[in-house]
Length: 329
Image 1 (cartoon, helix red, strand yellow):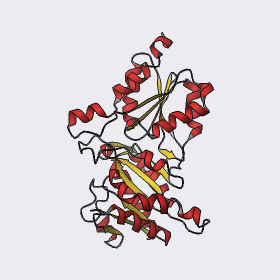
Image 2 (cartoon, one colour):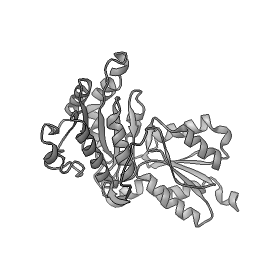
Image 3 (cartoon, one colour):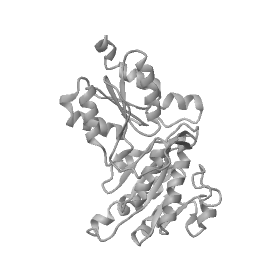
Image 4 (cartoon, rainbow, N blue to C red):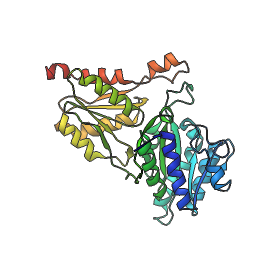
């Protein structure tokens, strides 16, 4: 095993697929000689040249639109937007073209593109650069959405995403780019729709993804010291979704806490909570608890951002709100 950062895991997967397939191309603002806003594509321009690692104008509409056209005509583009917040400029191409083209042409056209979307807070980047907007893309039929939480999963999910013949939204937590974790010598592609148990537990299931996986594990350690054993599930793939694993963990613990970094209002966490309540109601001993950001834009000031975004303490309090102390004692 070796240690690697989250960003390095993404880069290694990109490099491998570019070596295997000359149709894999990268494009985005400063992805070339500069190496990407967060350094993920560093060194790839030097290795593969400007025809395959292309700097673009500052126009998310052009980046996404050009990628859809390139994918529909034979390439496998991996566009990067500096921040997922800027996807608003490319939504028409993504939502009304990429997501629907294969369906509307009866399968005669594929759109094998992977849209890299740095997302979330924790960087003190302000309200226009810190949102968690996974609900935008998980709402659209025709899009696949993944969100790794560590270097190995970032690597394995990217391998799978580039091979997929459908458009994939590949969400990356900005707060995790420099975080190191162990990676095996050989990383295999990770199938979409397969979640992972990060920590076994018997009392409550904490279901989450991305950066919140780490907060959930921290919370689980604190709860364990108080006699509450939390099971932590890393979804990894938001769509397709591993309902079988969610059903299995809820059947085991009979309590579910859904944790996302997004604002709870209209969020993907609400979809997860509704699905558990509707489809697994007989397994629940308590209502599903949702943990998310406060209903406000993400502040620039570090102290205020810390208050707005969810953390391990919020998860601990959410678990305790289910009456687990009393149930265990």
